[in-house]
Length: 186
Image 1 (cartoon, rainbow, N blue to C red):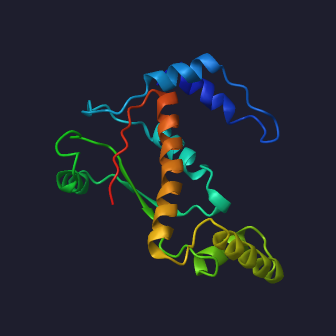
Image 2: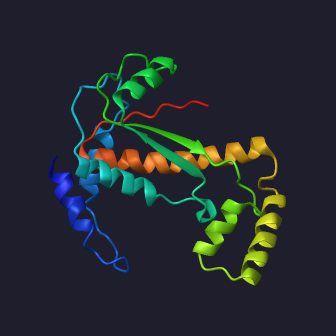
Image 3: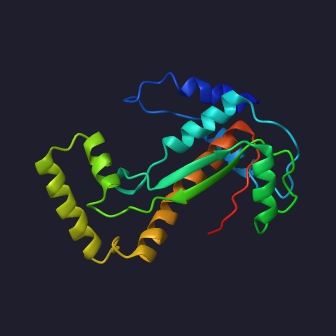
C-alpha cells in the first residue's frame, strides 16, 4: 500500500531473538497520520493486509497471557449493515465496509475455569504446576487487584484487555496507511 508496508514485510524475516530496529521517524509519521475516521471512503483492504492486521491482533500482549477476548471478524455486508444501523454512533457512516470487528470478553475468566485450564495446558503446566498457578493467581486477585469471581470486575478487567488488542491492530493499520475507527459499546 505504501513504503511502510515494505518495511513491515521485512520485519517478518527477523529471527525472534534479534532486536527489531525501525525508523522512529516512519513510526511517528504513521502515528500522526492515524485518526478516527468519521466517514468510510469505500476503499477496500487487501486480503494480505487484513491477514497482517489479524495477526497483529493475535500477537497482542495480554495480562497473564490469558487472551481474555473473542474477536469476531464480520465480512457479510448485509450483517454489517444491520449491525451498523443498530449501533449508536455508527449509523450510515461506513457503507461498503469490508470488515467490522467486534471484540467480546470471555465470560469464564477465573483461575479454576476450563478456559484458564486450557491456557495453562497450552503453556505446558504440569498438574502440580497448574495447582500452584491457581493458588498464585487467586492470591494475586485477593491482594488488592481484582476479584475475578465477581462478574462486573471480571468484565471490567476483560474490557481493559480488549483495548490492548484493538489498539495494536489500529497501530498496525496506521503503519500500513489503512483507516480504522474504534467504537466502544457494551
